[in-house]
Length: 403
Image (cartoon, rainbow, N blue to C red):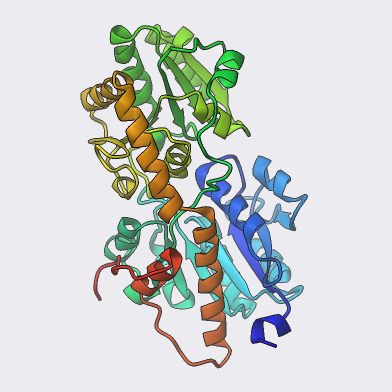
């Protein structure tokens, strides 16, 4: 009988602030749902509210919440410690920067948790690491980037040791996200069968730069007046952005759909998906669109160019460049053959390298290897290249800066 079959499943706790509907939160929910229950017993710790995704997930796994009552609530530490000790946790993975990264790692250290890692999903505000979190680097076994360029960012800009930085690509369920018949959802939304449709899937937060999307929509409508724009996602800026659409006199052409659980159906209605962010790491909305066979027009930030290959899976434009965004969008809307070709190539690449199965396997392997090293097995170095190779199932080049 092998070693794993003799062990109880490893208790793995993911620490996050809350679970609203967003890219990182959706990735976490999919990861937790898909981990091998024979080997791992995942739980989620929300320092504040559970949020919509947390409430859904609570029907499937333990979801702890309400541990941080205010910004300077020091009682969060004993609350976390008790959760990590009953029964003893085998791994703690903080998701994102800020308070969860700080308190989660301190509590894990005090509770004697063997594996302590931090998964990061951005290359700037609002997910900058900060000085206090950087001080806890010696207590952290791994920092997880979501793409090769993101891993380099963690080494070069956040100054984490290269030997502690790993790449585990974001992944999507390519069975759930695949090309679908567009007409049922178009009829439901009152969109004409031949109307051009541009979608954006992003939380309504400043860094997503919906202003560029809406201002660009006004210019696209001057050339293609039948175009419809779908805004999928919610957040504190919804009313402000609705007013902006009215100011541009495009309110009738823009549908604010809020948070939706039927994103694959909505993607089927789109001819193009846009991403207009000021900064990103490897946004899941791009992977979902490409897996659905929809080309993407995206700002060239973070690791976006690893998935949006200009001229092959979509078009890139310089961040904040309104004219370039409008030109790229009009180009794709006017060329159905190019859209079909780019969408097919995008799906092929996501299935090959950015699947949910590959992401889950990457996390499971990393947890297992570090845990074994902490329990007296032969000590390993974990270079980024080896983790990328395991996630891909083959050899891969190093993705971070050299030491």
